[in-house]
Image (tube, rainbow, N blue to C red; front, side, top):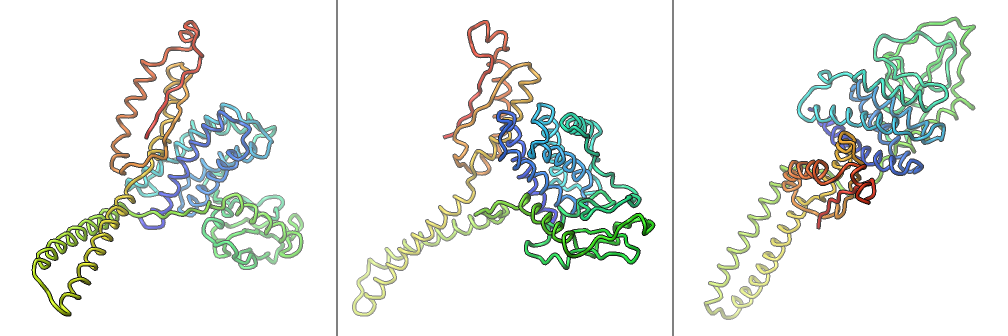
Length: 396
């Protein structure tokens, strides 16, 4: 896997996990506009990067889900259980593809989007919108020329969202005059907000000049294109982070060096104690005092370096816990029980190796809690309990 694809997989996986968390929150609070926008931005960002990496199935799934959430966040439709379920399945499909890539699969080896996923997404869109949206464009033969050309073509004839890809890879502030396709002499125009060199990859069949009006490159049309790109930039702008990703191998190497430095400082301290058993006069005494002070400082800094390095291996258990709300939701649905998982202490930090080793035991405990610790809604009602049960997952 090349570095660019590796970076995309890591960042997209984080977005996919966050999407699941947002969707479960949206299920409880359907009117939360901030959550709706967050889901839309995540799918939009993943789609842009996936298009650049030529991950066509992922692009198609994100395209349909983005269409759905564009209507939801703009108030054209209401959040329904079908919409939540469709989006959860889409995020799961994206996560599965990202996992395959991280395990060494090549992009061309990835599975296509399942028909069942496409069907549930289309059903969610058609059930929410007064006029059903078109499905994701097939990545097949180039489409014929349209009867009329819009000022901005968000997607190319190859089914890729070139605007999203442009936003994903071109730095903000790039002059738009250098990123707009030219108008052909026959009057047909394809105004892509992407680098002009991609234009030959998206051929447009010729059409009579009388049926297609020229699209101006200046004035209102150009202003609309710039406004559209700025809107998309704002929608997909990444949140500023104060952290960077470092390979675990590098952290382990740093920790080993820190440990060796502590050991060397301790050995130097032992040698100094032996030297101090002797009596030094004149300049030698002054040098010994300076040496003792220097070695004491080196020992202290070595110990601090080791503690700081150990701290870099610590991760919040929330990274692990955020996988469980959806698991509990689906298990509860299969068992016919109404259960909600509550999480406390997600900010508690433990070593990353411990975090990874806790997953299977916690899954087993949650399954047992759902199977044997929670009654059916009817049994709970007969016992005077609320129909909904709560399972608490705490760390401290």
